[in-house]
Length: 313
Image (cartoon, rainbow, N blue to C red; front, side, top):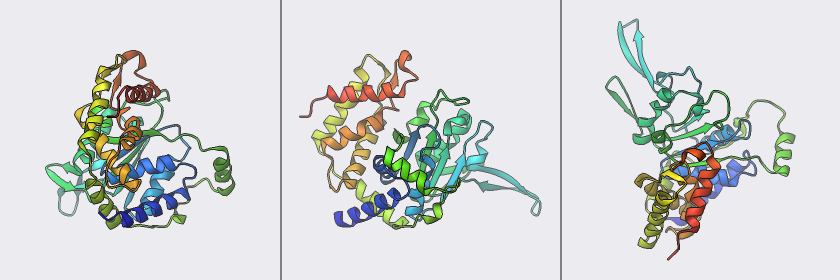
């Protein structure tokens, strides 16, 4: 493992993104965690606090192919993955793949689209490929979906299905910037448009593939695996939970812990990595009882309570 090279690339990425996304180091680290884990990130919060800017800054920083899909209620699956298009010259239908074919894809306001359209992302996110009329295209590496969603109480929003949420390794709220950072953001913005041309690449695709390989080599001891298992089992026993975390949730927690360990400069997972990542990995994977179903903060609090009830051996 080349820890010096990994740390250099990761530090450069965080510092570069922070030039645009100010005062949000945790959100940046969580997004990088999803990228290094070869998975996807779900960001829930109100519009206008930097979710799109974060996705664009990350893509620019690694010189990745970036696409933005603005999800709407009238969008169809073909608007995401593509479909059959008639070619008048050949008098035949041809497969045209859609905007999902990129390294980093921002699905903005994903819960504005219907469940049918949301499901178009499932194969892409789970298997990094897209199939149209028996033609399958393997998506390039790295491939990552960053989805944003509005709070459910907003007008015209649809619930994300459990299988859809399960494909995101982490879910988190962006939150407002602090006073000084927000003041500086207002001071330096003189245009309503997002000026992403100022964001320079500080790494390349090959650097991300290297970091993903390094993440896969991070070690997890039996005691850390037991800790993960005990947390997951605790979610299944909590009286406030209708459906606890799945086996995939446990796997994702380990992988997220590995990515966070690499970002922290270690070649192995420690208990604190798991404890820190658990609310971001598991909160959207449990199904609270009906009286708490619409309260995301309750799901986070349940995970934190489960952590408090699991001893570190």
